Length: 99
Image 1: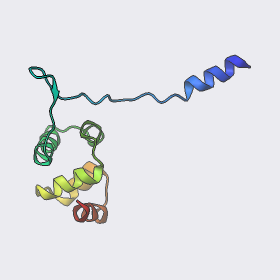
Image 2: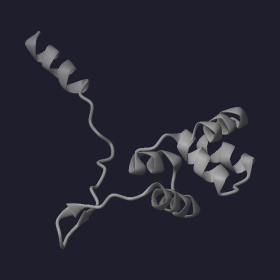
Image 3: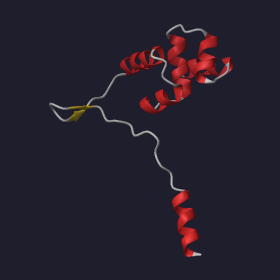
């Protein structure tokens, strides 16, 4: 019985799928902090490189609504934003008003 309980405990452990790399300047050994404009530019580059929305959300620690806001503010088509993020048009417009 004890072995079954241990197996159940090990099966329920949460394992991180993606470890966020820390952006560290090697010369000064300090963490690099990006502004919102730089983050939005990197998100647009990742979208243009056809990276999945889930990977983008994990990489920049942002919600899909924020990704939709960035895409809408950079004049992407609503149909493309819906297909890319999985949000409907009302959620996209609400995310634009939120951010």
